[in-house]
Image (cartoon, rainbow, N blue to C red; front, side):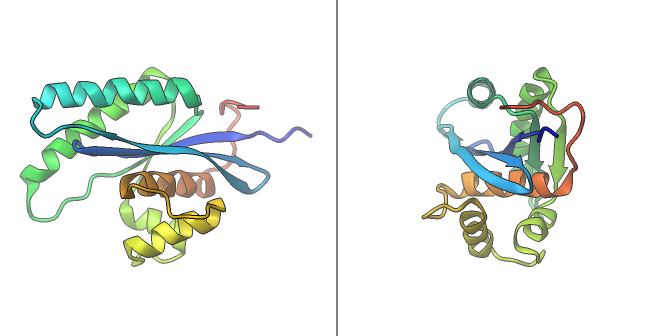
Length: 170
């Protein structure tokens, strides 16, 4: 019997910072592959910033060749206008993922917390430390957005069975 290795990219979208993290999942084990953060400059026009995110995500997808993706859903409190730039960043990320034909799995922040720490009320430092432990890292991944993206990928690995259409990345 041949085990399928799933390569999953998690993404925490944002206009200023879009975190990404890649994990491999095989035989019930999650292994760290890579992480990073795409940062845009606030003094640039919004369209330029969105195009930069799109271009950078395409490059990450080209380099790491994931077969699945996990994206944190949009969460906003009372200020809807602050959520618009994040929604736009999610849009360009979704376009890049769709171009590759990747299944886009969306998780709420609470679902990610539950999937990583076992409790939906876990705080940011608890999630980051659990990401470190699960992936066997010596330090918490930085910046925070990259750690959040790795948490989304871990949640996806635990939430979905292997599919016949998943890319075997071996």
